[in-house]
Length: 411
Image (cartoon, rainbow, N blue to C red):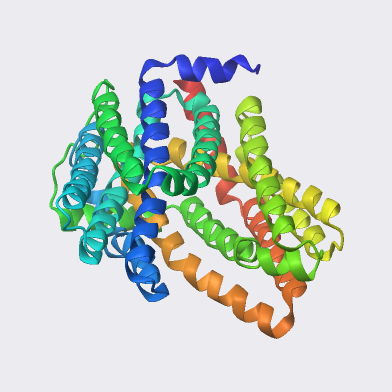
């Protein structure tokens, strides 16, 4: 496998359209969220309103996540994504209109972010499920790696530039850019061809919903994947929550050290995504087991470190192997799960992650207060090691990997 594999992926017409659409809408959305958050704070000077605003963004996932996949299945994934982008653009245009008419109240901002969160819940599983229709199965790792690298760069640059843009030219610029990005994204996605509706039987929604959970019960490999996803979110929570405290109290580097550690972690994630897309491994269960194991070891070493440079090295390794594990995990689902179940599986997984994350964040803060920052990281590092055991010891994932490989060879 050469570096040309990335060029081959981008040269796939349909993937290139999806990739550009994702980058544009992702960048615009980063600017949009920060701009609206600033407008909420500037208009209320209330952390309560800021917190409620952030919660509204996630509420649709909790309300819709378990069953939205069976609804999406009844339509062309392309049309679902175009529809969601157009509605998102409409929501942004409403904000712009209210801004010029001097009608932009806190309630309008609440409605705007709720619409964005609602459409994102519809768009995300469709986006994940469309990839196996437009990319060959043996190139899914490279495609997912390309997407992850791009998303990381877009998110970092978007959130970083948003503050500068708001401070210099005002929040309205970011909001207008976001509306344009959604319209361009809808146009590009509409140009994707060879995408079909996944549900040919047109059963009732209730029957499709039951069949989706019945499928999950019959697939131990998918249950393992879900369990691993939960373990990884819980185990990695200290890195997200305790970063400032770690930088100040463990390595004595203050806010500057925190920024450096976060940037180093993001670089590691991007490097890991690059390498896993370059290697395009075949035995996914080996890659997953190794990736999660080394991720846990790196977090353990990070917890025990007392020096900033050592901590930077260990957090770089952690981010790298996080991508090495996560991208094949994601690609495994896209290759293994039947197309008609993909949106359902991804929507359920997204909901579980959304439910677990705040609980894991709260638990990390609580544990750090009672047993210390370092020990909280140590406990979190054990969960990736448990995840690697779940991958290596039970036979289900290896059997699923082997049967999937045979099927692809026969094709």
